[in-house]
Image 1 (cartoon, rainbow, N blue to C red):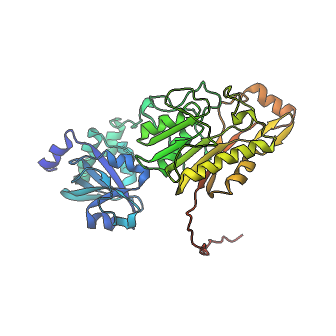
Image 2: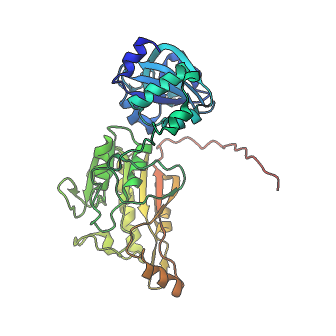
Image 3: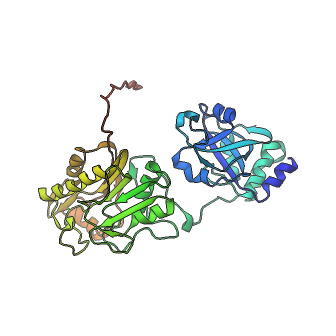
Length: 398
């Protein structure tokens, strides 16, 4: 290992960027590593002089070390990769670049997750192994437990980004600071908003929550570097503005993302305001007519091509089922295109007790086990006629 590398290891931070067989060549040709907005925060942490590595996920090949020639930023080369990976950092070679094949096993033994920053101790062994793999016995090191699992402390933990249409998280909040208030009736699970914000917004984007409740959206946006406007008809805290969601005081096409956790009917008493939609029964058309007024306002203020997330649940009361979710979705579809429909596992509701589970079996009814999260997109006004798509399915023999 060269003296230059040794100097840069001391006190420096390490970052691993991912690529595929399709993108690797452009990484080397441009000497730029990149990512999409899902990992934009990771790129923003890169400082000039940090030690970098490139991991080809397809080939399971690990290259390095490199040095950050610039700080992590956005669109250093806007045309690179067709604009798909705008969060970028310029790099330069740090001595001879080495490659390790079958790298997944090596990273696991050293206790490295490529998505996270690499600490100095792990980086020391990683670079040693890159340059002289025959002299580093990872199994012996692992047996000595030099590399305990790099678990993030609970107060720093962020929820995972979920890749399926079934979302489940054990707690309402996460991290050191509160996200909303557990004492607020019907408080929104924070991981839902976190997932939406990370997927569909970028730093400094404007997020609107017109039914903000205890302020979960507001708190997450502060943590994630997003601007946020939060309204509620009866705000419980000073940084939420008093306003009726049926008349949003914002200009057209001004918001980058919207989130709404609306009332599901009159099953919860949120406040004493006489105009609260949550005082209207979900068994009446009036309930959906008032929510549609909110939908129209959401459509008006949301930018074309941007996303609205609407959380809603069904109702079963006094032996009558009301498909609240389907009825809300039907009205949302008048204004928005569907991105996807998510099932969110319900936890923490008052009916999640042994007594209620016993009653559900004895009297042959079902407790509400999930909520709908409708992810909708505002279409562009001048949308061209839809091109017929050609889908080639792989057919399996029976």
